[in-house]
Image (cartoon, rainbow, N blue to C red; front, top):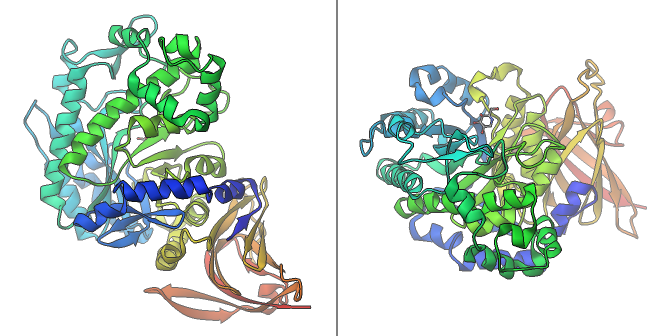
Length: 556
Ligand code: DGJ
């Protein structure tokens, strides 16, 4: 078993616990993963060791993704020139919104032409789709609901802020809001089953988009306040009791400081605080989304996920979209919305390593549906897949990128070549990811009898120095055998140690650079001399993304 010695890696090690293995078994037995796939071979999730893989047409699938800007999918003419870019960036999947206002312009009158032509275009380019349901909520607001919903605020009531003002946000505390969303989402999924059930161009669905309450941590609509002042709902009591000692620390602390009560209203049980308001919001949002997701799933069972707007440092509930599927609320969401398979981070700020560490759990496979497109993106994708078995990585507003200047393009080239090898080795302790920069310049991995010490190489020895202080290096490691490794990425130096007491020194037998063509290794240059510092280390220059294979030996 691989052991990892840096903070991100420690979390990874702790994933392989008896509890987690138990959970994996429960998932399989409950039929939410493997069994479903055997039945009808729709896209589904399947466990492989500690990894959960997305299976498409019977095979593991790695999402090399990009998410469209919000309005792009409303005009295929606008989108048309971008397909060539997606292919140039080695993308295999596009994440594209479906807009409620366009598909149900009048109540009960459906127009799926925008969805159908998007699917047809994607097929023409051999690209798969993840569809984003812009339904009741898009970034805390309800701007994508149709005009017949917007204009009838008596039938479709709004959230209210603390001062009692109505907001451009439908309240979660209304049966007619929920029914309308359930109905259209189920209709959409039924349509997808008919239009795409055989071809399966659409492989996953995001339900709503970045839900959360802002600028107050809870809704002050009269129905919401009534619920807040009522007895804790039985579902939430069950959640507290079932989790008990294994509750997430944030919720556990709140529950324990109130004396672990199960009777009373939210403030009786958890005390009066913004955190209590947020907990209440999380529970009722999760229940609303659960019912939307379940209604859709009944029509067409594709993997479903929700995305989270992450908290900026120092912000308190109400200052950020509160109650969404955030790290401290993952347990609440898992209990409240069991039909949602994954809870996923949109990573635009903070530490990529920290966020991915928080979202990768035994019961929550990692998928990154949105991230800022930066020079770091290429390495971030490789890291997430190598270290946390990510199902995929998908920078935002991808149609506006210039493939020629993006480091993502080179990284995706490497990732698409390596995908079959990675997918075969995932979840078995044979992969790792490196994300190294000036603030975090080293990481260390143990594979069998070897330690791999990796460090950031910000210098292009044979080209120009790397000027960007935010630059990062890294990539992916795959163990192919006891003495053989693939290291792929950019801006990394790797040195090797032996853990064998009789042969305590690790030597480099050979390093080759090369490419994978249809899963078959084609070696290029034999790297030695200056390229391996005369046999002292392996080096992947920052100026490029490379795949190298190293064979090691041990001596005394
Ligand atoms: C996160 C949202 O989920 C996206 O739809 C988009 O609004 C981006 N933010 C913009 O940064």
